[in-house]
Length: 268
Image 1 (cartoon, helix red, strand yellow):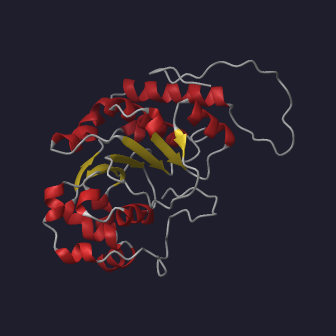
Image 2: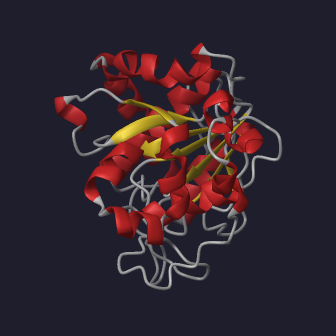
């Protein structure tokens, strides 16, 4: 099954109608999921939200930063059933087109994906990560876009820890919950204790919020594009970079992360 370029269409297969047995998955089939996804894409374009968002999406490329060569998406959720998750996936696909990242270089993980949703993602040419990384994904020298809308704070913190050097962080672009918003909502001592890498990088990050739109208030609220200019990172003190202990979250009351082996989605 393959998706036509730019059309997000899968090949049409013959199907025989049959009754669903006990234990089989309910909900829309793969073709229906892809059709609803195309409708969500059309809505994003016709509403003007995508056009209004394009400036924020391209903001990290206004300086010397290289465009992302690949993409990782965490915590998308059940897009076959949930309209918000479906719009977020449609936005991601438009984003890949805009930044010219081939679908095959975009990998996704959410333990909540159903078999039909996984099939839809493969039909679109996207890849599924084989295991739960808990956000601990190193860029390995390649400029990488991380699409993490409404993920838990620990997931962002783990991602920063996994790339804790000016050279690596300067290759990250994160689309997800506003770091400024996290700073405003949490007590300083809690932020520094539980999410120390977010706290330490605040002076080295640039952030542009996605525009507010009445149709997508719950879908993209508090969502920003973040990037880490190398010159700003190099201005941080050496003590910031010397501490590289892996986050453990032993005292954290609202972890908001999918641990390995857990099966629930980690949207906050």
